[in-house]
Image 1 (cartoon, rainbow, N blue to C red):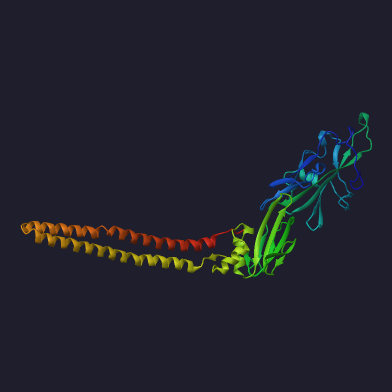
Image 2 (image 1 turned 90 degrees about the horizontal axis):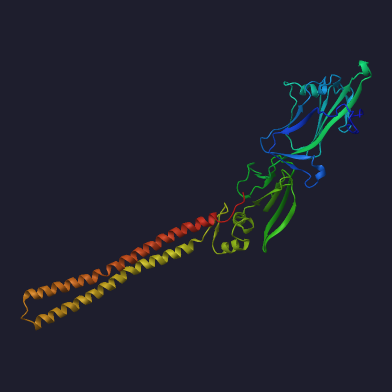
Amino acid sequence: MDNGYSGTAAVKTDDMQNGWSLGQFYINGFSGNAHYYDGDESKKENPVFLKNVGDRLTLWFRLDQRNLDALNGNEYLSINPDEKGSDQAFHVPAQNFKRGALIVKFTNYENQSRTNVYTDYLPAAATTSADTKVQLFEEGDYEVALDYEIKDNSPLAWKIPKPAKYSAYRISFKFSVRNSNCMVYPMDLKTGAELRVPYTENGFKLDLARSRYLDLSVKKKVLTADGLDLRVSQISSDQEEFTDEGIYEFTVRNEITRDEVTKVIYVGSDNLMKAYVKYGKDYGGSYSITDLKEMQGNGYQFNDDGSIDAPVEDVQEELNNAEAAVTTAPTQSKSNESVNETSTDQIQGAATSQKTDEVSNSTSEISDSNNTEATETEMGITSHLPEVAVVVILVVLIIVALLIRKKSGRSNHKDKGGQTE
């Protein structure tokens, strides 16, 4: 109707625009789309366009009627200048719309709206030089309308003039633009830099990177004599600051993509708590808070970076045992040598007795007997040398293994567990 482009009427067979289209809007430059009203089939006309960093969403109008003075090839149909146009739905006051007005209303996350009116839009869309695109950089909800008026100057029979007729038309639609990401960045209050570790003594604030439609919730736990106690569970907001000591677990959700991300930050200087947010069972690690307390009582060292060192005493005791094994090996060798010496004396005594009883034996035979006895004595001593060598080698291997174990123990305690990034 020609009263602020309000009201509707069916396009019947005798309507000026029956059977042909002026053109069509389209949007490009987005990374994905979704239905904002999930499951409600009646509201599918309100899509959500998802954009990533660097995307440049653009609204275009493809004009199918290049000749605005002969619409659909009819020389009597034309786009009429609307000198007193207004739009009731957008609260646009009366003004000169000229030959078509494009109206774009934007509403942000704080429900603040602004409306832009582009007059004489259709002649610009009919040219190749005019910039008729509308770039959509911001998250929010959009309403678009193209208001135009058609003049029918058809004559009566035999080309007898008659008064011209006018009809007002409105092409309108709604859509939304949202960031597709689901991220929140904890920023150190003192340095202003993003926290790359799950602890800080300075406090932090949360930065949603201008994603205005993410849901953010925070839980806070503090250490008591009975363990960790939940003290806060509430909705949070962009740029909120947290300075009180405790473990903060915050979760961000994207209701459009259904994505969810959780991060943990400890505020304070307790090294045991730093270790817990790195290695705690609640955060993908192996230790409960009770486990860490017992380890601390057993001499484990908790460092400023949240790593854990095993007690040095355990390793020193193993080294002492290894040294005791080394000093035992030479004593056993000396005992073997005593046995060999005794055997040699016995052999020599037997040789002397034999020499007295058998005087008739030649000197060469006595000499051969002595040589044989000496050889047997050397073989007796030599046969024990491999056993000594084996003991020494085993002792060396034990020392090397203990040193490797000590280094590995420290490394495991420093790396064990899971740190949420």
